[in-house]
Length: 309
Image (cartoon, rainbow, N blue to C red; front, side):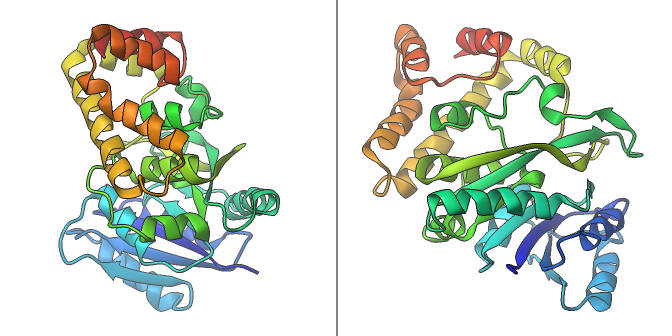
């Protein structure tokens, strides 16, 4: 059996972290190690974590950052430290279904059998959206947000992330790509950056099953806001949307600077044109969106994109 390293990040997560750890330890696939990276919690999180490390010394390993890294870099550093063949990611406040690791690994191994273990691969799944008490709000994260999880080509991913980080598994080949360069400073989210690596150098697989309960509560850093709330948010603050686009251009520029020498000519061209959108005039930007497919999911999202870009 292959060991799956599960990188969990924590920060002041005392309310839900025990339930999350218990759900992972109850996994039907037991060849796992849980690597928990705490980002300077000031509540009771650390004593809780140490109690699990004491109880399960072969499975649970605790690391505490010397300085606060923030969510994205905490995950990145956690992945960069691993040597496992397969890596999954966990937030501190969800609940995993007991078949989550097994289902995801099955799809990963199927892809490796087709494409080879040297191909950088990522697999992600759907999630059941629940409230803080685990009552179901929507059986599908992607249906809730009106998102198409099958649009995982590089042009679409440059404009809109599809991977839910807490459902993602990557293989050793993808891990090695990340570890071959300095960690990014402009990555929007760790799952987004890993998606760009997989789309640029390998392939992404999707499992329709919701493999975890994706808890929504007042402390979420990233979560499911639903489609109608998404639209209201976009309409109410156009300036914020333009700033978000600028952040995407910077992410593409950094990706190009780190991996440009190993990209295919086609993907290098796609990344260069996306990063250069900010330099184009009104008409050139919109032509580039259509020509390269720098689009989002659905008509309404794309109408909004053409308005603000």
